[in-house]
Length: 42
Image (cartoon, rainbow, N blue to C red; front, side):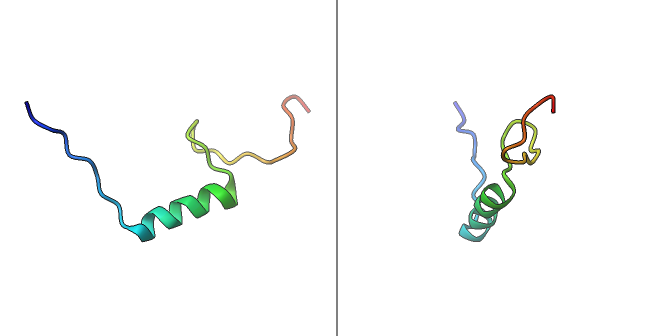
């Protein structure tokens, strides 16, 4: 049985990605940024 290899990311890439999540509100559901306080249908 072969073990699948996981990608290894540098600390710099992880930090940059985390900063994008915090600053721009990225989520896993489609990668779209969401404005806070905005409601659907309005």
